[in-house]
Length: 259
Image (cartoon, rainbow, N blue to C red; front, side):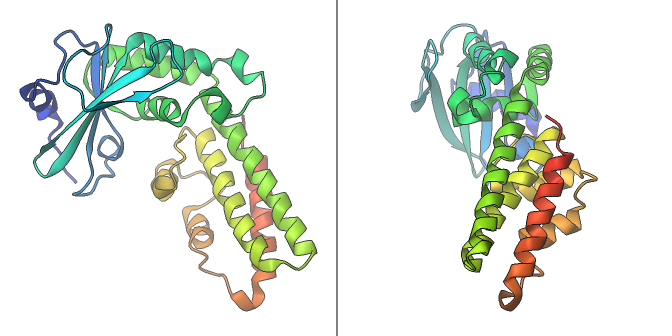
């Protein structure tokens, strides 16, 4: 779907929501990726040196030195426009949380960063700059050189392995229905790990098919992925072989993933 990105800053400024001295502004989410639909929001992150003191609708509260990230929204052209105002220092602090030293502590992604902080890094990697392209380019480089991807991959692999073990245990006592549910969870995490290792580090299930289509990993052809994701070949009368097949696939995918 086409969208005129060139008018974004003018529209934000028209509502009095664009700091004159901002470092960068960029569109994130489905619009930035070209995955939007008519009801998709226009999500914009604005980066400043000083905290935004203008109009705000609310704020995110994060475990940072300056904990609040102001938010603002307005309607325009049939869409909801939503802005988040980060300071450059806040983003630097989030990056510090995904250093290789932090990765070596063995803590999981949820123990290192919040979901909003994880989403910030994920979205920066695939944003559409409106201003401050050099700033975006440098932050992307820092994310790529950090342990962010490794943290996400490790988390997903751990969950995939845990759910595979659950499915195996459930099969052992002939609890096949529960094994079906467990192996579906295992498969989702295994695919997310594979995609993260290919640079698609988002974990929202609603965009998994899009991320698969973008990454096209050789270890899992899209048709094979989609058959399992949609349970196309699943027959309740012969559920056990299906579960066993997906368990084997999950183990195979885990072996293909590099941290």
